[in-house]
Image (cartoon, rainbow, N blue to C red; front, side, top):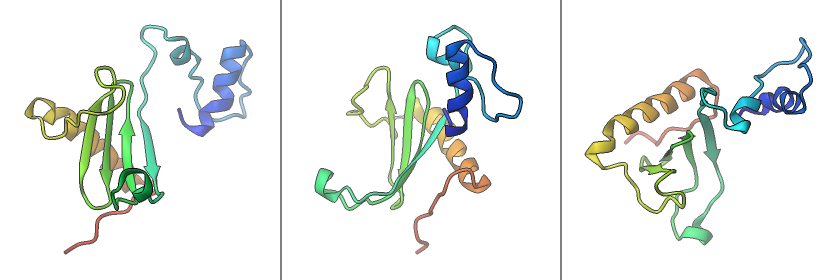
Length: 128
């Protein structure tokens, strides 16, 4: 859910009409878990040095999160894919699994389109 969806969704959850001057989408159906409610993808960015937490030097990554999948790419080019339903703690990276290749390709393309369109601030690994 995008920040601009918050107000219309709160209106929907409260059963009141969204003012015509508002922007964003009412996502109340998704919150209620109704069948057929549109699934939207969330794009996210992480820009905090997590060396103290994880022991890595990866300081920035971008990703796509859906109801089932979490895919992300570090600034250094490494990628990860997790099946949120089967692995909610994200312990098993599926990015190299041939079975999940189509999912990786779809989510990577979604991330690239978002970066190219400017809807999220994306950095690219330095060229060598």
